[in-house]
Amino acid sequence: MALIRVKDHDGLYKDSSTGAIINKDTNGYQQYVQNRERLLSDKERLDSIESDINDIKSLLLKVLESNGQ
Image 1 (cartoon, rainbow, N blue to C red):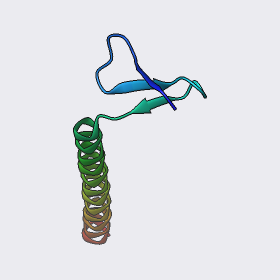
Image 2: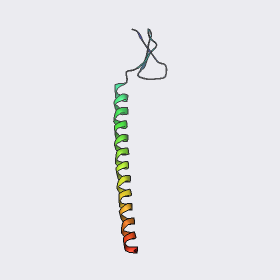
Image 3: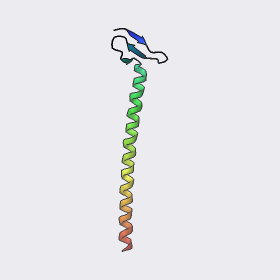
Image 4: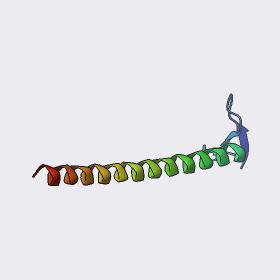
């Protein structure tokens, strides 16, 4: 298996026997994984906050309805 460097793409190599592109940039991959985990964590946090706001809104509407009757 001979690896040929892909022009203008650091860390990418082409396997001459299979034609597969191989990423050997471990630092870039680690940064990608960390960034992805952070984004997923942020999304979960925002979803939780949105749910909390909807709960508060529902409770406020119930209070307003009970005071109006």
